[in-house]
Image (cartoon, rainbow, N blue to C red; front, top):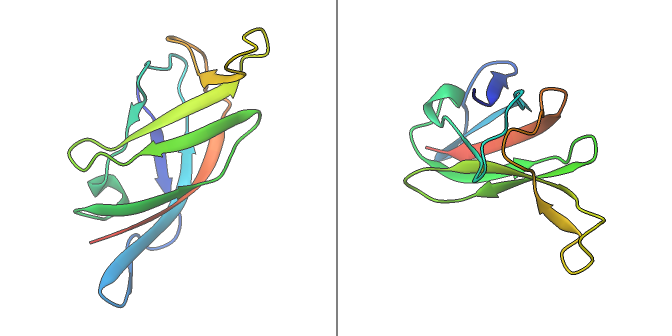
Amino acid sequence: MALSQLVRGLPAQSIGAVKMSVGTLTGDSSYTTGGYAFDVRGVGLNQLLFLILSSGQGVLAKWDGSVSAPKILFYEDKASAAATPLGESGAADNLSTITVEFMAIGY
């Protein structure tokens, strides 16, 4: 399965020398440990410089800024683990009801 990317409005609006795209990301029914791949071209960019994510319904979304393979990781409250109360969502967790807003900036 994969992360669903929905771009709102016209994709990749120019703002000076860079472009910006905004939209919504929705998880799927089987989270992949290590994060979902983020399709830079799917949001109208060739190279991602920065990605701003909102938090969604009890989870924290984090961008792994690897230039070669950007990923979106989801973290949730792991209250039973006192040393690390916030941990990555588990393999095969159902995140299909989780949506986060994004703003992608790049070229």
